[in-house]
Length: 236
Length: 176
Image 1 (tube, one colour):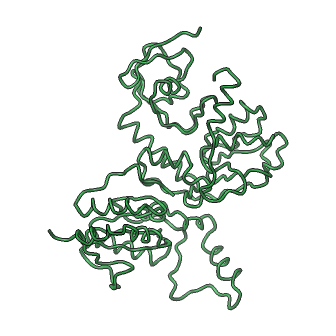
Image 2 (cartoon, rainbow over the protein chains, first blue to last red; image 1 turned 90 degrees about the vertical axis):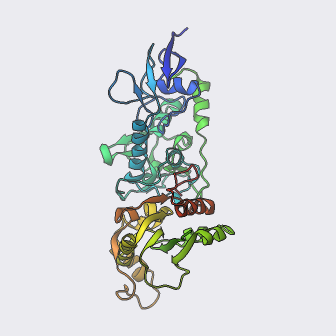
Image 3 (cartoon, rainbow over the protein chains, first blue to last red; image 1 turned 180 degrees about the vertical axis):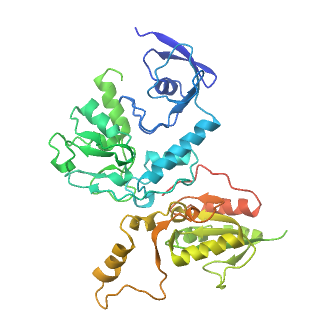
């Protein structure tokens, strides 16, 4: 029986299990912490930094998805500073690549778009980069549009942790980082890909989509990924 | 009560935001009560007037003419509103930014021309190297994203501005 710990989130005492992340503990207690890279059942990597929270005694905010709960922790998930940082993160994501919502297959069903609305982002105060990025349509069933990728690495994790195929990786560094199939080949040539489509369901934006969808038609089923993780047992 | 001097304009956009503005139906009567529309695509005045209280700008800044227009608007308006995704993010017009002006013009006017292929160099305003959001070139006071923003969102914002209040970002705001 795992040890129970008690901590305080936003002034409220909550119980959590040792080893659980602050994000999972908050969610289990009905609290909402914004996040984009996290999927229930997949490992937490702290890629998007949206779930940053303030922990009493620590000077800088920490991502809730990679911070394990501790007995007596006092956590703040809402503050002026956190809201400002979270909005800045969304603005940076929007300005980094070419997220033209109006002509996206995921328009209206996009976690990035919804999060922007939810956090009150009305525009980007950072200049847009307009990078020239490829669209990989070499796969028979799916398309990878780098213009809409936020490098959350959900596809990498679902492929490795649930499907066990390890097709996806992230290559290069910093602003040049890209999602890549196998040895950085066209997706259609990636021999390890089982065509299961879990990466597509896990993707929060219109970066990984089913071929042949028109604007607004692509609806993702991220819960399917979480259900599969639960069915397999074991928590991460 | 003195009526608010309201202006609207479009730069590099599809006019969809203005269609959405017209979609406020009988709300237009409310706007007419609160404001006098002093400039816009449906107003027969060519020169952007002085002393405008609120200006709604649709579209991205893509040409030399857009840039000039938007600077004049800023000088002569108390409050500038970026209306819709093209004004707020440069949206679809910005999709050419990765290719460069020359490639775009050659594609449109040379490669795809059936007869008399030539790149226009008179009357049509010259394109800027990249298409930019309005707040990239002038100070913008209010942002209303959406492609287009809904009629009710526009009406609420205009009503708030006419009442002298700044509209708060609402959960109805959505890119795309």
